[in-house]
Length: 208
Image (cartoon, rainbow, N blue to C red; front, side, top):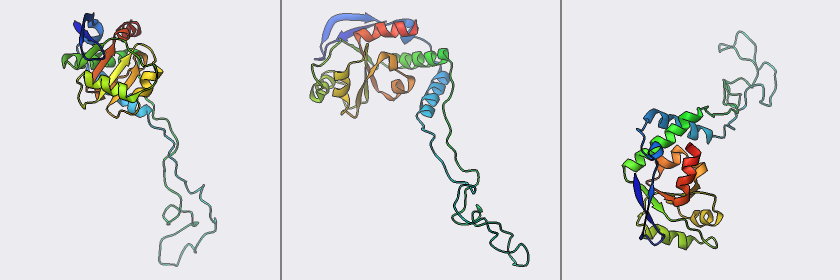
């Protein structure tokens, strides 16, 4: 499974990279992909929601009317949940929404997502490049030269590149991510994946 290597000008370099079948050529498992995306989205939730129950509301504990003879329902203090301004019954409390997922399941989900993109022809290989300083215009030119259009694109690097990351931060449809941080959700939400040459070796080490 070989792909041609392009440079930042969108031209073929004459080189090719052999993508490992065990990462980019597996039979996609849709259920593991679903679980991985579910875990990612759940982990993004802060879980800091909180409402006051009747024990946390400020107000008198005095019984507001006599028990019998009023012609209406019985009532306790003014903090009762049935009254406006009272506490909330079974309100939300701070909690963690995180979901546990086995390491092998997460790995299979990433392989399945990468294999699906490979089958769709949405993966490109580019020579390793960097910028001397953060420059959004240079990054935009690279995207244009690769003829990726206005679709959402994810650039995967072998190692963290601060200048490249900062250059892409103002581009709403393009982003840069280290191979070690690559996850199933980011793979699926991107229309095109552009791998730097060094990132392929990093992927082999991650999945070995």
